[in-house]
Image 1 (tube, rainbow, N blue to C red):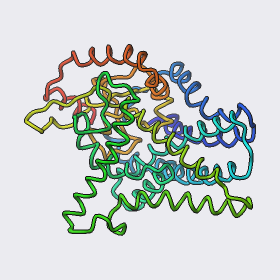
Image 2 (cartoon, rainbow, N blue to C red):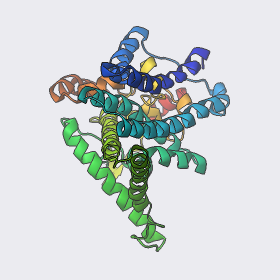
Image 3 (cartoon, rainbow, N blue to C red):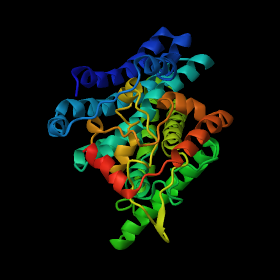
Length: 371
């Protein structure tokens, strides 16, 4: 890995800095982080271009074991926690105009939705410390069930009719939002229910049922914030729970927009009734734009992640054969909000990619060539 690319991951600190600076600038400056993410980053993507670099086999062990990459990820968890607490303080102590409130929430959402990506990265690790931090980050956006559903549901059922987080061809993002938000919660509940039944444990005991814990923990967190800032302000801080749930809604909706983009129209072949071919690097959309990939910890190299879920973000690989998005995620998220534009661009691209034929032997050659 080049030194410049390694240092490039530090760009992720720009967003939280802009949130704070934008607040102190006031007015339209509140939109700074949002504008940076959704306007400036796409411009940089087009100017700087794509990233063709895959880590060589000889480099993998040293890069995987480099603590530098872990420090960045773990620091994001504490920055997000601090921003949520600080944001609760801001809305409880100061009066914001309507424009400032919208800008503040959009800018904060830009970071906290990325925080779900951080939780996603940590949630795939096997050590308890990483899992704790994954759940902590998800708690701050009321989406803790993602920890169960993503790992035990989505990765098993992706690109099949059984996965609520896989969008269908011709499905709008708005229809998909209901499918994935409700369906993923139900799936997580059913996964946990089966786990408890196998262990002969009570479904309704919060000591045993993680889903009950994942409802309780965010509520306890926002209650604590509300009580704290009600005491400091001398009046009931009604703005705190409104702020907390609003930014949570915006953050997980942004995350589901990413799911919509990553899996739009992709289907695995059914090789027997109820059985599907193994997930491989052809089963997710990718974008290899350098700047947005650095900002998103290479989440856009999503096919390699689904083929090898435990692979850390810094060594994820690009496959030319994977379906390729025309732009990075920021542009694609905005495009997904306008269904006619989305269908016009993506349906043609999906059909063109589906017209290509890759047999099982060729897929293995793809993987081996990039191992």
